[in-house]
Length: 330
Image 1: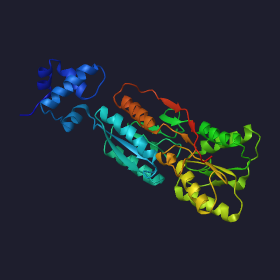
Image 2 (image 1 turned 135 degrees about the horizontal axis):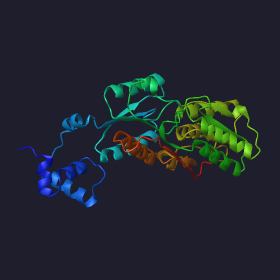
Image 3 (image 1 turned 90 degrees about the vertical axis):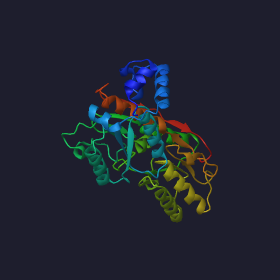
Image 4 (image 1 turned 90 degrees about the horizontal axis):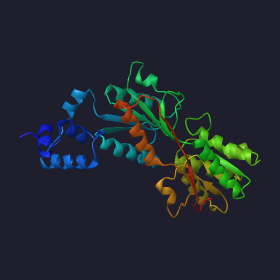
């Protein structure tokens, strides 16, 4: 026999509405009551009918998560935060990877809207609203994570990247390095222009002159860091310290330095950005800027579910503070 919510309400001696709120992870139910209802439901073998629930509420109880690089350990941590929080409220998460391709990003966003997801969390390639991909008539809410959008009407969870770039460069300067380079996306590139801006602000504050030949634009991939530093060393002209736009770049840089018979940090110091798990490995020990990756995902999911469920329609803008993690690479 199929167990219904009314059966659970009778067994738990609570109202039908209380059971519904508890099983759908809604607000307004005390923890002990929720635990009791969940225990009764499990004991009775209750299985929720997701399709019926969606038809009644005109929701799919699904959200889309669009990220630029699933191979970068930063983004799985964000995704785990999104999924863990979404699961608490009965939502499933569809993960889409764009590989830093704008056409693929647009395709994923429009496809998620066609599949009638209730909302989208987007780690965008560019700082721009996604109206074109969603269509002007779309009511699908979007929460931005890791990069703030150009529009002031959009909600986002980001870190203060400019402050992080400043802290990384300030640390190198205070360690006594005079020739400092940068490898990573430029201000006009697809990502992290604020990190470069923070780096330049530190040069200006401490009276150092930027040497353009040591500032190399590139993407966020490990291979880019490796190829760039190999080229510098083979040219015989390289800085004594490098701020890398992210940790994958930094790891590639360290690999290249060591393969060329040089030492980190004795010959070239390296500071990264993100604090991915690899950064703490004994063979890396990367000094870096920590981003609260998991927490960013959780906050983005919470903000999106608030919008989906109508608890707020006002834009929320969360800017988190970076933290310098000192290890032995710089």
